[in-house]
Image 1 (cartoon, rainbow, N blue to C red):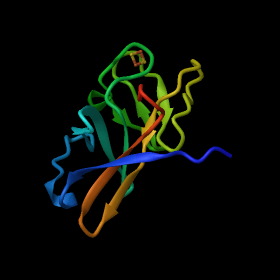
Image 2 (tube, rainbow, N blue to C red; image 1 turned 45 degrees about the horizontal axis):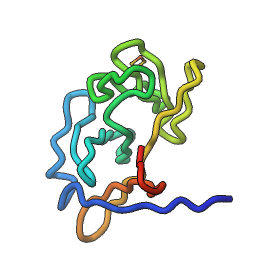
Image 3 (tube, rainbow, N blue to C red; image 1 turned 90 degrees about the horizontal axis):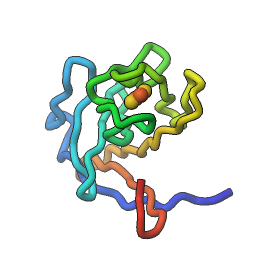
Length: 117
Ligand code: FES
């Protein structure tokens, strides 16, 4: 199994610094890229800013009761656990790990070489 390598970026000193929209999402930056942070069932998760289908802004969508991000444009659904397009259109959302550490909250961006997501 391939081990993913992440570059970790601090996104806040603490969770109280994260100001979520009413849909429990927010947009921030990690490594110069916009990312979406999601609070779901008291856990912090993250994914790319834009939908892999046609670039919808995912923070303008919502998370359903099963923990899927629902894109606001065509309502395709993506699992926050593995990025799988659970509504069946064949796309894949890049999800990012989030770690709450003593010195802050960090999001990891996978290092794939020169081009990252
Ligand atoms: S742009 Fe997101 S589902 Fe089409």
